[in-house]
Image 1: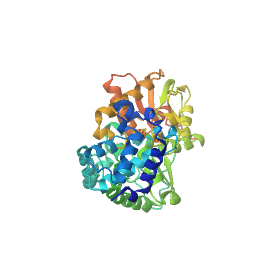
Image 2 (image 1 turned 120 degrees about the vertical axis):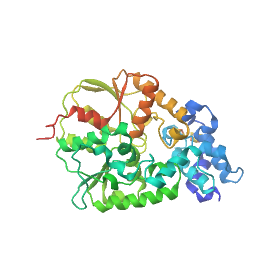
Image 3 (image 1 turned 90 degrees about the vertical axis):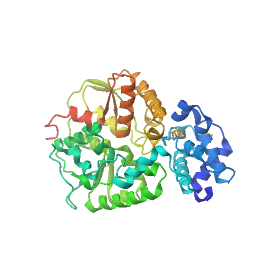
Image 4 (image 1 turned 135 degrees about the vertical axis):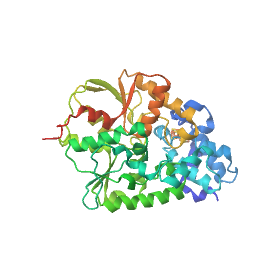
Length: 388
Ligand code: SF4
Ligand code: SF4
């Protein structure tokens, strides 16, 4: 199989070869840590072209280069040819697997877990409802649930993150909003395997999840995971024509605007980290900032690189699993940037960013609190906040 079976990937590589400016290099968080030309978008494009033209053969080195990318898109603003290098890299991974290359050994367990359990965390299906323990949580009912809260594997199964879905449920209750959960019937959106280029497993998960989501006939699906949000909104054909897909920050922003949530004072300085899948991929920059601005006494201090220029947390696209040390270095660099603002808390809106930035905080004994936006807002909204 040649690269012509992946025309968009080859088109990006060819366009890059016409330019070869290298402007992308210094913007790439992986290059910043590894300082290897082959890890930069330009280096990867040279490799893609060589393999596509049959000058090179796929090997383990090519796999290592393909999987040394966070798919964060930070290079794309500085690319002279405005190339979609992250999309090309995702295709490159699919291309290498289609040419018979085995997965990186570090990713095998993750993929097996998705095949066997339907989640990347080797947890049984029943564990998906563990986070609701003690909550009076509502199960979604077909044709009777308007707002379906899609929790996603990581918020549901990582015990250290379960305060986030619990806070979102608490906020919905305070706002007087009805909602429904799929609990143990929830299926992985397939984001993890899509980013790894494993199209067969992704298609299987997508079809199953799409059917399950549509069976509720909800008006809107809300998710607090930026990875799930991007996948449902951008990668599920036709889903957004039939149902509105909202990130929790957009949903909370609308509840605040409608006066259903009235935050009380929370005098503190915070900074906000834009998750790549929410920011550069989906261009949701303002909603989380408006939510923060609605909290009296809270001061948002922006980092030097924020919004479109935000540096990645290092947790994306399988890099944390395959290269934990590099991933941690990327996260520490971001954490240090947050510390320089003088804020007491680093707020974000994605479970993977919380995981990575907390690892960075604990490895450097940082005093910065790393938290998620729903948790912070729930702290600020008193129980009667939603009663008008
Ligand atoms: S997507 Fe991110 S990690 Fe990948 S090449 Fe671009 S800047 Fe580097
Ligand atoms: S900036 Fe764009 S065109 Fe220039 S080398 Fe990098 S990827 Fe290629």
